Picture 1 (tube, one colour):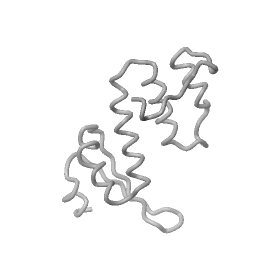
Picture 2 (spheres, helix red, strand yellow):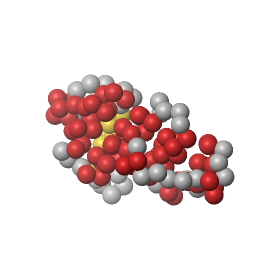
Picture 3 (tube, helix red, strand yellow):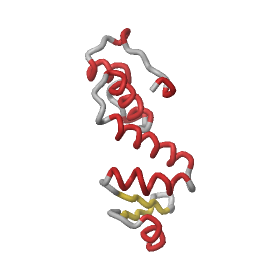
Picture 4 (spheres, one colour):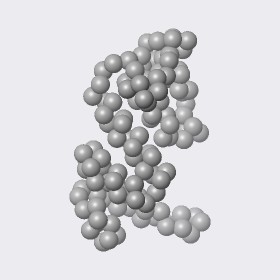
Length: 116
């Protein structure tokens, strides 16, 4: 853990767990969004493509939280759903967007990332 602390520093909490399979699971907790975006995301870019992709989605979600337009709300919900397991969802994506935006399911349109 000392090596990670040297690389990442900052406000991190580490949790170590041995899984039933015998493998180690290391969980790093940080609640400082700016630290995550400016320090942790660039670090994962060098290591894990899947983790880095998830981190980029989190950074985009953070940006969208400050926007109040309809397309931003739809994109935010879509991104949040894309980084969580579908097994744990109780509400389908279109239904969630409908509840948050007040649109009927037929009115919901997804814009591409390039349009923004």
